[in-house]
Length: 571
Image (cartoon, rainbow, N blue to C red; front, side, top):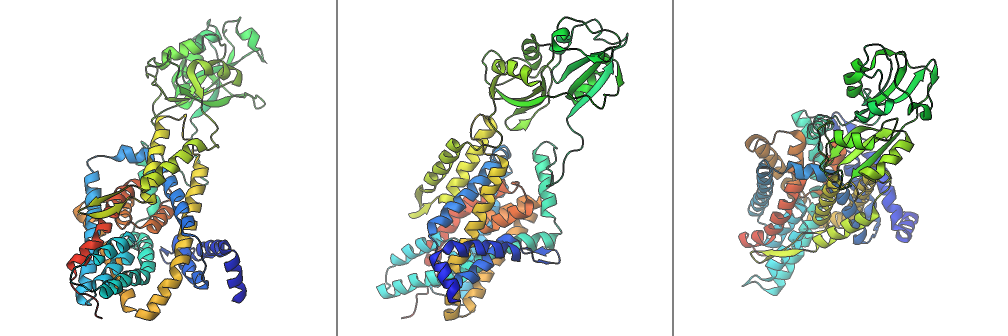
């Protein structure tokens, strides 16, 4: 043991990464339909390894949590703002219900077990995992009249003791609920999250790892021109100029592919074979005008490039796709065609009369040379899909941390936003900004997921390492009664809040219901476990709204508990 202590003292981050490795290994434990999960496993292992007295600066935990929550907000930004509607009222009421149930549970235990003001506030701070209660309750105790300074000091100490004893299960309880309630209700959260993501993306399914859409959007076909073909007698340039999401890319005559220089001089003749590429629906739509379909030769190769361009040229804004196609394809024998059209982060249907707006994103396909020729006429090429825009990433993180410094008073009680809520808000804002203007705030999915998962793992690991020694010592000193009360304060409000939200407020979607529950508990590790279960960002909206409300209300519970409970510590 002395060797481990020496290693952990010299390099505490060794203990941290051992905690992550063992925690996620333990998290694979499955009992029936219950899976512990990497988050819960890391927390438990962190508590055990924390007995070696591992010391890691609290700022490390804060910054990794900020990274985690910023990445979550960024991914959910577009969906969050589009989901704001009258249903938000029910989500807000859900947060109020869970936090009020938490307050009532604490007061009930305080009366039944005759807890003093400090111990009751500590029970709330740890059992509801709202560390701000330590400050607000301690301040309220310090202002009590008719109480000796010694009694005040002892009650303020009891706030910290109650917090230390109950905090571990206060963090673990919401994580467990992410497995307990779905198992009780017969829900598959991953399946429900996929369904919700599909509904939020206009019916487009979200794919699991290893899955792909076998029905590709693009198709390549070959047609032989006959006497009934509408293109007979027209030049290739004339035909392509009228097309938007389809293009004739090659003409084969007498078994030989015509060179590009020849294509500009000749007209399409009967017997020519036209190789067409474009969106599958467009190919089906135009095939009756082209001729009879024939097989493409096995050895034929046709190289095209796909490129995303942001519409920002003033002379094209406000024009239809048909007008733009006629203008940009005018000087080309082979056409450039649209494969996708994205506005506000969502793909919309491509039609000839679709009017282009500034910052619409158009995805073109065609030969690289031809795309180069039209790019300057349309707008700016979208940057690399694998590069992070660190200008906006840094600005977003800084903005979130500044948001977190904001503090205000409600009925004289100081309330601070906190870095977590601040970075969540800035992440939502940057994600929404990215969906509105693809030129800025690039944060690729792979990078975002890595930052999210790493931030989560480090945050939960440090929580366990820091809380372990104090909690074990406090339990040994004060017995199990306070710990068991903490279990009640953690679990009872969650069950009551869930059933109230599900049956009274009619929040029936499993993902939204769980997001409301975890957010209303202001349970960051619980949210991490929920994301682990869903595998996507669908819980972000319900969690964010309830999280904001819970942070304020739970902070207020500190002085309210001190005011309602009248028992002072005996000296």
